[in-house]
Image 1 (spheres, rainbow, N blue to C red):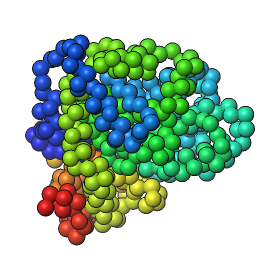
Image 2 (cartoon, rainbow, N blue to C red; image 1 turned 30 degrees about the vertical axis):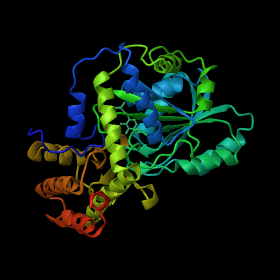
Image 3 (cartoon, rainbow, N blue to C red; image 1 turned 180 degrees about the vertical axis):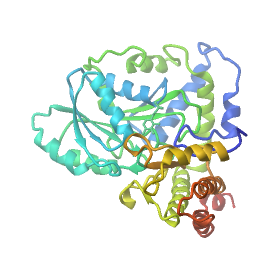
Image 4 (cartoon, rainbow, N blue to C red; image 1 turned 180 degrees about the horizontal axis):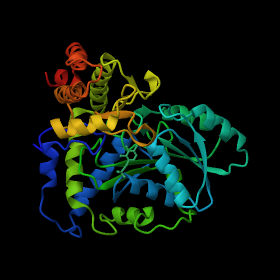
Length: 396
Ligand SMILES: *Cc1c(COP(=O)(O)O)cnc(C)c1O
């Protein structure tokens, strides 16, 4: 391992030097009176990332999955009915988590490669005239299939059915890399984590919570302790944590937010679109297919790519790792052995993506894929060469 090659897994993502340095700090007293000077602006700035003015942001020391558990246990009671569509490994894991918390989970099965079925949700909610359904759970960016769902369309369907269910959105692999609008889309609980768009080490769950969701918490009876919004909210309000905060991660988060604001959120999104387009051009040149069915579903943070019939995608990703020391995402769940993933989110540039495409292309040729050296890379080069690099035009 040379330790210098970027990873092309869709999280955890590459940690830029600037953030690694920011996290490399000595222990500091979290009960000192000036801890609030670090914490309060972080919370305010995170609201800008979620695009919420009326909501709150709550963080926990945890990976993203803990954020899900917090969102569920703080707002629902055992036996509550929740509606969720399964279209990939992460939406599947929401289902599992809800079932283990004894919620009554109604599942809409969808083909992997499709997104959140706004129409079906709308029909189901319209038929739920007694409002038994308490929550709708959506994975904004299904990291297993490389599909981005249309949250605005889901919100429209909910409004049309005039249904009061809370809207929960997993934005772990989309926040701070693709557009996310908590207030505009009427999202009640938006769950994210530190190790993807924020480019940090794993270890913080970051959750946007609407006023309506906070109010629902007053009567929710799911047991919670470590993840209690009230304890965290009260402690944050007086400048601290109810337990030991992940100080080094908070220092990293300060720097991460500064980096995102310096580049400009909209430029961050444009960069991710551009990186993703280059990858998609390469996939097309290889004659391969994306798992995402239609262009409106294409994710700008991860591409899930079917290998040709008879080619095991695990052999490909293992070979790329063993011979070229580069990590790509394996196929998850139903996609295992059939597809591999190129993560293109976080701290990445055109040049880094070209290196990744070059490495996986070499691995494919080694394994006798029907692909010629340079084809995918050239297609991406051509795209990057001819399309405006916003980061550069901004610096100029
Ligand atoms: C990474 C990811 C998660 C969170 O996983 P953790 O490993 O618990 O941080 C959740 N949902 C999606 C869509 C993800 O990509």
